[in-house]
Amino acid sequence: MGIIVKKGIDMVPVAEGSHHAICYALYDIGTQFSEKFGKSAHQAIVIWELPDERIDIQKDDKMVSLPRAISKKFTLSLHEKSNLRKSLESWRGRSFTETELEGFDITKLLGVNCLIQVIHTKKDNKTYANIASIAPLYKGITPKKPENKERFFSMSDSMEIPENTPDWIKELIEGSAEYQGRFPAEEGREEPPVDLDQVPF
Image (cartoon, rainbow, N blue to C red; front, side, top):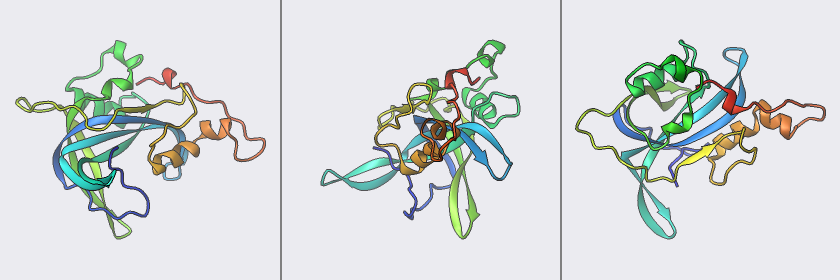
């Protein structure tokens, strides 16, 4: 079980700087509306664990040391200006080929190591840790396996939200256009689910 900061819990943000990270979870959160940009986009959340950043929690009546986690939300697009494409190309250390741009399987990220650069931003008197960049491991750094069980959720596979999904992610999924179309909150609201397999990664 990973360490995810939930609403109502105050936790010291991950320190600024470079961190060894391992991708262990991917969540399709469907089409989300952005008030900031005034438009909707199909998005996903990628979560990494930080093996060198630890936190002690009580689990099964024992205190255990687990890696902290950090996440980033992406719009599912490989447009040349998209943040996902820039992050993936930086992470891979090379550009996408034309063939790869026709459809990149995002599940390839699970279990992959990288270096992430964390910076802090402040909002409403709170400090947040944000991922500024992603890069491959330097030569000489030994890759590690994730301690957390790998997790993957795609609306094209099922609309049933997996157990142990963090509450804040569950809320985003349930608020998506796809989920509301399948389980309408208001009578008469019907929107077909988007097939994640058709989104060009």
